[in-house]
Each structure stands twice: as structure tokens, then as C-alpha cells.
Length: 98
Length: 98
DNA sequence: TCCTCACATCGATAAATATCAATGCGATGA
DNA sequence: TCATCGCATTGATATTTATCGATGTGAGGA
Image (cartoon, rainbow over all chains, first blue to last red; front, side, top):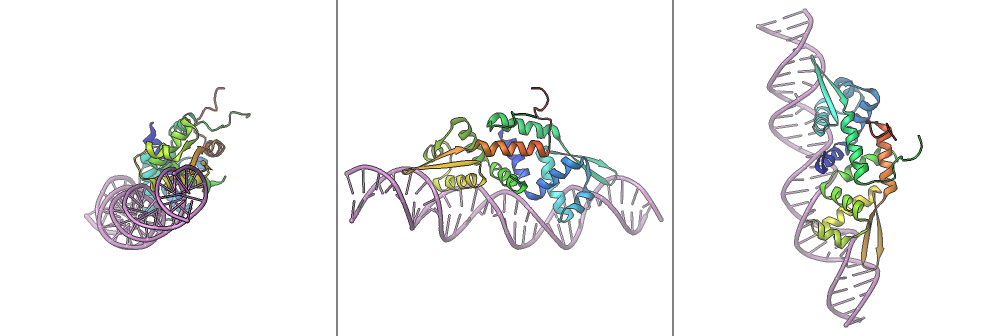
């Protein structure tokens, strides 16, 4: 996990649709592509395009099951991402309570 | 600090030049535009363009002094950014030990 | 085997963006 | 006042990217 990887992760999160997708995966857990398609106002090819970028960044995993694709957040990658940023450029993160 | 702000921050960090600039500011502290210009292989207008985006995102502050512009990392914004991500989509960050 | 479903890929297009040369502008000094 | 310096802005251009319609593909069902 070096700087170019982090830049790619930032770019992946730097789109409103993709950010919202990641948000859904974080709250909702593993989610089928067809359900994501219902939630967002994009066509199926567009969603597929975004999911490909998210998977390539390592932030999202995919599990194929029959005709369906199930996407889930890769929390390990997310953790490494946040750790990198926090270490590289400490910004007074929640070192406080709770 | 809501989702669109976070997306804008991600987009700001999702460019190799801007990410490297932020990295320099994090290590080096407040830095003059002329010094940044020496460190990176871009023209002066391009650097100015990137700095404008970084400032607009809130990640970077600028202090004008005579003919010079001094840029610095806004660690408060960075902290809020990381906190938002960590809270929104916990990824196994250092919440454990401590 | 043929059809349908869920999704990926292709091809095209419009919008966004990164970049540079040229120029504008305030501050400083001669 | 004029010239120069540091930086921002403008205008133009090439690249990237987000998006959609059309099509391909593999899995199941009739």
C-alpha cells in the first residue's frame, strides 16, 4: 500500500455515485448488484463500470453466485487506507475519548 | 462536513500531484509556492491550479505575505475527514488497543 | 435446444479535468 | 513612475472519465 495505491483509492472515492455505493456496502453489508441498481439512478452498464473501479482499487470485493454478483466492502483495505493517511499526515484524529 | 464535502476531499487527494503536495506540506510544514514549484515538475499555472483546488477543499490554507504565498496543511480538516470516514465505514482501524 | 435473466463489455459521446503559453495584477524596489 | 518579481487568471487543447445504448456471455429454466 504505497502512495499510488492511496491516490487510486481517493480517486475511487472521489465520485458521488461510488462514494454512495461504498456507503451502502458499509451499512448494509454484502449487496447484490441488482439491489444497488435499484437504489441509484444510473443504468446497469454505468453501475458495472463504477463497481469495476471500486474492485480494482481493492476497496470492494465481489462474489459471484449463479447469475448474481454480490459486492462487499473490503474493510481490510479501508483500514489500511485510513492508517496510511493517519500516519502520513496526522491530523488530530480521534485520539480523544470513546 | 457532509458527504459531498468528503467526496470533494477525496477528489482533491485523487491526483498524484496534489497528493504529493499535501505530503510535502504534512512533512515540511508551511511552504512557499515557489519552493513547491521547484519540487514538482509542473509549470507555475498548473501548480496554482492544483493549489486552488486544495484550498477550495479546505485541506490547505494559504497565507499571503508580500509577493509570496505560503501554503500549509489544515490539520483540522484532515482530522475531520479521517473521522468521518472512520465513523461512516469502520474498517478495523486502530480502535482496538490503546 | 432455445429462451430469459443478471451482469459485463464494447463503442460512442459529452462533460470534466490536467496542462501549458500568454497575460493580468498587486507588491517591491530602482 | 517604471520595471521586475511572485503568483493568479485566462484561453486553448489534449486527455480522462462518466454515461448510455447495443451487444456479448454464462447460468438456469422451459
